[in-house]
Amino acid sequence: MRIALAPMEGLVDAPLRAALTKIGGVDWCVTEFVRVTSTLLPPKVFKRFAPEWANRWHTGAGVPLKLQLLGSDPVCLAENAARAAELGPPGIDLNFGCPAKTVNRHRGGAVLLQEPELLNEIVSTVRRAVPAHIPVTAKMRLGYLDTSLAIECAQALADGGSAELVVHARTKADGYKPPAHWAWIARIKEAVKVPVMANGEIWTVEDYRRCRAESGCEDVMLGRGLIARPDLARQIRAALAGEPDDLLAWSDMLDVLGEFQHDVATMGAITYGPGRLKQWLGYMRRGYPEADVLFRSIRTQQQLGDMALA
Picture 1 (tube, one colour):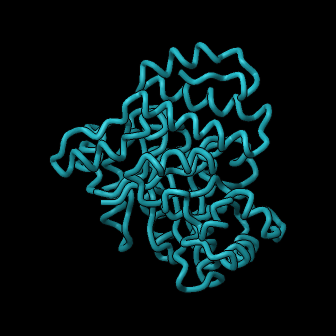
Picture 2 (cartoon, rainbow, N blue to C red):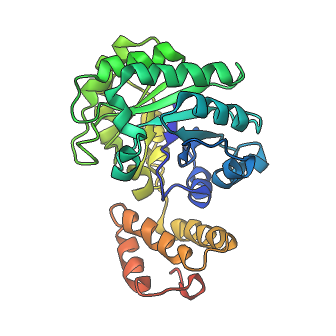
Picture 3 (spheres, rainbow, N blue to C red):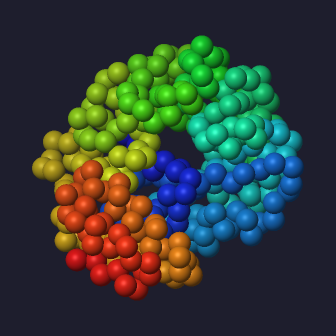
């Protein structure tokens, strides 16, 4: 059973990846998407999205990091994937799931799920451009406005050479509204010959159990659920092993937040840093009542140095 950390734009950056993977239970993670349009990007762009490249594409805890690309031009994506591959990532992931209106308006992310033939062309072109030892994978939703092309899209990606599919069990139109339609993942799993990983609406161990039962997938990618409860991956593993809950105490979580605060500060994020800390605490209020108290105490503060974590 594998657990991956989802690539969430504007949230799961290097400091947060470092914090969450150090807590444990995560097997691999993915960068925020690198937007590819009509330009061959310089290596510094990939390095900016993945500073872990300097640690051989691993977080400080030793968890491997894939690089994710987003775009609609097969040739341009392939050229950028080939250049990125020169830096040695353990995998190139392609984003066909982003629901953001701005991204979709510029033919990126989930909007491409209306064009299965293009999906196949993108993956196959990228696969040919990337060295054989570097896997190419894809992340998709169930569709754009509906699920009518879900199976066809999954088959197009798999037949194009995607070594694995991560399926977020909602359409773009669904956004992040519950429920996630895990049963659809089971249908996709039956229709393709590559491994499938389930994603969407897993907030608790019980959610994982239900997702596993409905999707037929042991492997999952955790997004907001892991942000809200950073020990969720550990809890799932403990539950499956029949071991006691592996809960992270709030006092230990404060240590994690302190390291995160330091990592964000070292990025020179004077105005960006406070917002990042508040953003994470906002999610954690769902899993830790103490996070709400801390969030309220620092809500009006504008400098990281002013934020006392207690």
